[in-house]
Image (cartoon, rainbow, N blue to C red; front, side):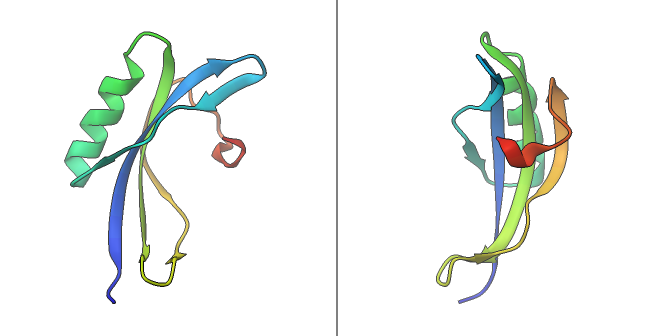
Length: 82
């Protein structure tokens, strides 16, 4: 199977121990994911959002690292802890 790229908007919410990831939203293209992340960052209860993409082969589960496209609001420098 060929590689595919997923575009994901990930909202960030305040948690007792800092910031936590909210429910991710898959989008169809780079423009849509940036607009969605911007909108999610402005929702009540959200402190920020990240638009990112990830490319790989869904048949094998082999995916590369996520590429951050844009950050909105309060986003930690180290996203690996989310």
